[in-house]
Length: 470
Image (cartoon, rainbow, N blue to C red; front, side, top):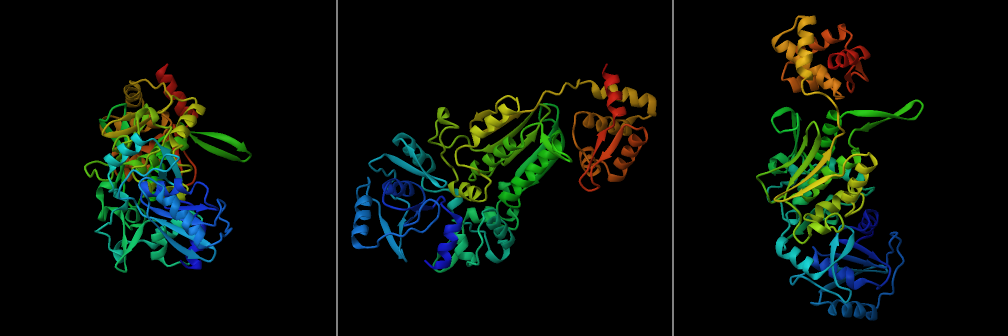
């Protein structure tokens, strides 16, 4: 341990493998929690606010700690390291799980030690074993070829960590790598967060987004695959959702206004992060899916409920399939607080006066978020076709394009020329011609900046559609 490394750990704060304690109170719970999980270190002499209080380092203290470790069932092996007036207690992952102290069974969940009953922890260990995908070595990872220092720098900014510490030590402290015979070996957590492009390592970690016409998985209007790294995938998915879901505007004080998605953005984000954090990464035949239908948004990930978590405890207790991944998402502030995401989704949907999220468990885990009811008749396209065919003299493919553009805008979608080109499967020049015709008829107008704006119906356009529907 060096002064520089200690400062980094203080900046990072408590995590999946780091615990600060000012004294010995409750130490047995932390030792058991680390032994039942992936191991970790307790820094004795540092309080919860990351302030170094120090502790008297003598044989009596070490003897007390050894007694605490020996009184756990089974006994836990600990290793001591001293730095200034701080005692660092290292706990290895146990070989004889589950471990118990006088207060019960505990398991490390993110930066906290969570109490479980014995049946839950035995079921968890039986199902998950001692092998977790996020802790395995990524054998394909070549540091010079695959590591992206800019992504590490971005992560550190998000986590509020400023340091000049060696990259290898930083990755080790984050649980993203370890030293083997003096060589830095990156594990799957490191690969998922800090790869230049995950497609070269794990194509199955892709997050696929799709927009459908109607309420069934038949007619695909738009599709995108994201697999650069986990944080980028989450960010790109949110952009996709915001591009295709209607918004309304709330005035927050002149001249500012706030965009509000029809489904709360916070609920969508929690669902996407949940899918990425808790998917079964051993399953290589399926990807995370984010699908937009006319009446709902569904987010699905391979792997149902984590074994050891009963359906009746879902949303109340947290058992992590990928604790190291969840820990880094928490550090980067993508996960606000471990184990609260489901409750937060429910509250956000309730506050928006929308039905609660619907959860389905099986070999896959699905979250369905209902969209507000938009009373648009199914025959709108037919009626628009009749109107434009007669008044604009259009037919065939040009008429179909015009109808689909107007229908989409009437449903409240925000679409640019490139987006419409991708959706219609037509060249930009062709779609630009369609949009020009609609502008000349006074039915649509472009709103916003050139690069980020979108088309919307004018009052004349909306009145025309309502007339058709009346």
